[in-house]
Length: 254
Image (cartoon, rainbow, N blue to C red):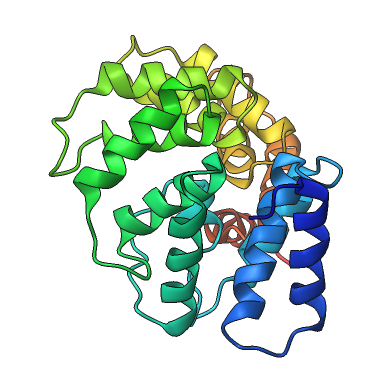
């Protein structure tokens, strides 16, 4: 990326909106999404950034919300766009934490490069220790159990909690999941509901869905089907299929 975040934002925005290059256009759009999400070079707007990243995902450039922001696992690709993206991230990895983080995401997923989860985990941990909430989410996911890292649910929870307390909506959702399932922490459905709620209020579609579940099934909160439907709709409007399925089951979709 360029030295000035503002200059970088306008550069990538220009490529995103005006380029007809099938390789560079999705890369530029993805980076613009991140810059909105982080408030770098433009006004902070996490929901706008997430929406851009989610809607930019295609078969040629599969790095969408679930695969990149939420710490997903199934996104290997050797498409020209994927390979170029990894190359750009690698070039900027010594100067910019986001480039380094995204390079690790690519290594973890095998996106545009040979999969190397051991190296990715090392990078995530370095960045997590420097206080980057998105890297903290990813290292937490790694401790949930992958071949390269011994499962340690307590460490996973600790990293999710650090991410969550910095306002990361995906970290907040995962803290809710940990309290709900007793992963690395004593099971506490009231606290699970509390953290799902924080995530939902921050616009996270998974958090919104689980808040809906809590209201529908009286988990950590009094049953209220109307409120459940309200949160399912918020999640469904962001394309979350399980929320759409719940609304269909309740006869409330579309």
